[in-house]
Length: 126
Image 1 (spheres, one colour):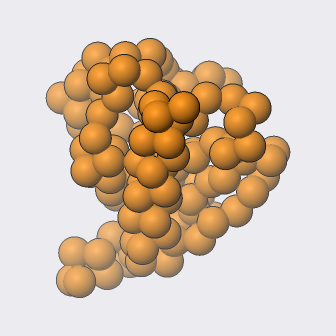
Image 2 (cartoon, rainbow, N blue to C red):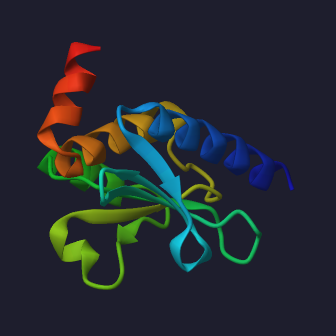
């Protein structure tokens, strides 16, 4: 259970960071948590009901970050065709899963790739 507790703490940090970004909002389509900027999802945070392993899915347009994310234990291109657009699903419960700080960096990159330009400018000004 220690791994799940650690994964949940990581998930909570990543969620809090995502929602701290300018204009970010939390929604619950399909019974899972997503972080949106404007009308666009920039992070799929999954569900915390225990039905599925905790994971974070982000859009990484930087080739180095994308390649790095795919080296994480259990990481894979996102389903539903999103993987072709740079989306990566990163499990949080795997041994060797990335630290919350790195996940937050990737959430910020995903936000920058998806959010309206005015919100990215607000982030840069902040």
